[in-house]
Length: 157
Image (cartoon, rainbow, N blue to C red):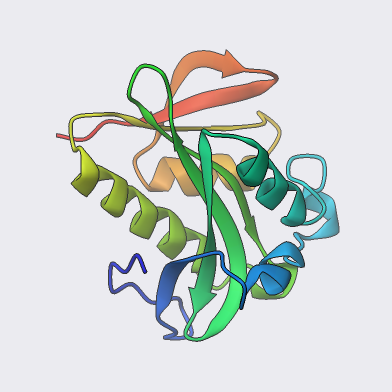
């Protein structure tokens, strides 16, 4: 379990846990709001498959107390940078601070692994919600793109 002690706006404890035999179905069923499907997969199941088929990505379940409420994955690039990807918070859980707590929890954990490597992610330029969230957490656009997405970086001191 990855735990930074953070809580969402409802006071629920947000943690990241391995995807396992007990929770994979709940994680696979996580679905964003309909208006977000231009930017993220319709179900987190797509990201779980990507993690299973790739040696780069590792999926984790996002929990609020004891309930699966989302998915996020992380990986290490050839240059040693850490990447966040495939973040989906279930539509019914959005707007409660779950995504913010999940990103902070994962970036804190990644920084503790090797605090000298940057942490990167990418988002579509039209995804204003993602840009706002990531910017408020200290990610700054690098000017680079990955596919049709903007790359942003959190530089750790």
